[in-house]
Structure formats: C-alpha cells, structure tokens
Length: 257
Ligand SMILES: [Zn+2]
Image 1 (cartoon, rainbow, N blue to C red):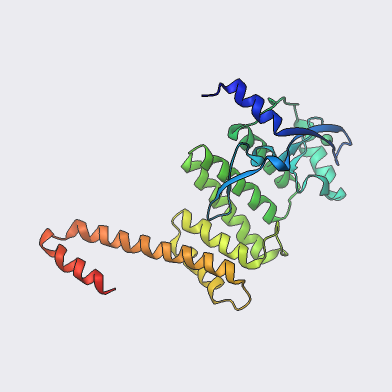
Image 2: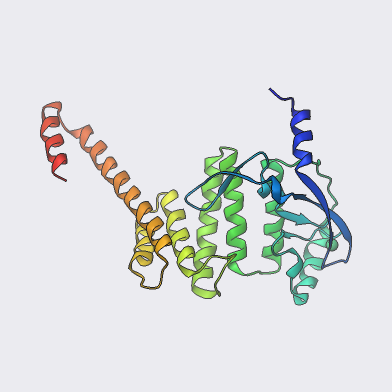
C-alpha cells in the first residue's frame, strides 16, 4: 500500500505546469496540466463520463486566474468574447480573494473549481451548452465521490441547460452533434428516473433518418435497459400482491415473451 505522499509524488510525475495568459486581466500564470501520455482509460459510463486510472484529467479541467477570479473549463478559457470581459471585472474580480490550491487535486477541489467556472459562465450569460457541460462534469465528480443526491441535482441542471441549448443553439457542442446531444438528454433523464422524457428523447434518436448508426445503437441499448427495469418493477410489484401458488403460472407466462 502506497502512502499518500508516495501517491502524490507519482501523480506529480504525470503533471506539468503550463503558462497561460488571462484574457481578462493579462496576468500570466501557471496551470496544472496532465501529460497526454499519462491518460489511461478504465471505462466509459453511458453518459460519456470517462473513468481513468492513474490520474484524472477532469480534476485539472478548470483554469482559474488567481489575479481576477476568471475561471472556465480549459476549452473555453482563452476564447471569452471581449464584450463579456466587463461583466467578469465588475461581478467576479471585485469580489475575488486569491486562493491557493495544493499541487495535486482531488474530486473535492475539482468540484469547487467547476463551481467557480459555473459562476463565471452564469455571470457572462454564456451559451447554455457550456453551462450544461459544466453542470454535468460537477455531477460526474459527485458520482466519483459517491454523493448521489448532489449528482442527481446537477444532472437535473444539466438536462435543463442541454434542453435549452438543443432548441436554441448551434451544433456541434464540444464535439457532440445534434443526435448525440438528444441521446445524452435522454440518458440523463433515464438516470434520474424521468422515464417518459427519456423514452421520448431515445425515440427521437431512433426514428431519425439522419442519426449515425452508432448513436442509434447506444440509444436502443439504453431504451431496452429501461424496458427491462420497468418490467422488473412491475414484477416486483406483482410479487407483493401475488400468492406463491401463482408463481409457477407467472414463470410459464414469462417464458412466452
Ligand atoms: Zn485574470
């Protein structure tokens, strides 16, 4: 068993410092970045959350300027529109107190930094798909730490923002085309038990002539998964009301389907 110091030392080897210039205040600062050779994918969840072994790149996804408080996911950090800068300076920088983080981050720190980014996206009234992805990543960090209620709360926020983005904004969104976003909204609804909404979104993917085969297959798999869950629920319900003597009959009936 490695001590946490040893673990930190091993993690440090997978990171490097990258110099970034803040587009709001021009301050140059260093961000922690994960060497691309360090990535090891363990598995992917059905809502596209990637589990990594060794090091978790999500922990280092938010860049934060300690001088002015501007924070965003690294994909968005440099590209803020100049018309939005005043909003950051007036609403974030005036209230910002600089903050020191340890050299190695964890899910708790990641959640805090994603939340700082979310405040920034909200202040500049950014596109909904950015807020949606930000909320989804917070949900994933809560999933990692086993906090299901918080995870679901942020999944709800992500659904709301992705739905708004779907109807009002341009595709692709972080590389996702229209059908991938449809599927994702369906899957997020499925995860929090919104069965009807999930079925509607999956159905739209499945009946679309434009959607890629791959995303249709995933949508079908999740739809089937849901049907099985619904059937199990009905059977469990039936178990509660049915005498044992009926069991044999029910099993033979089930065989037919
Ligand atoms: Zn700055």
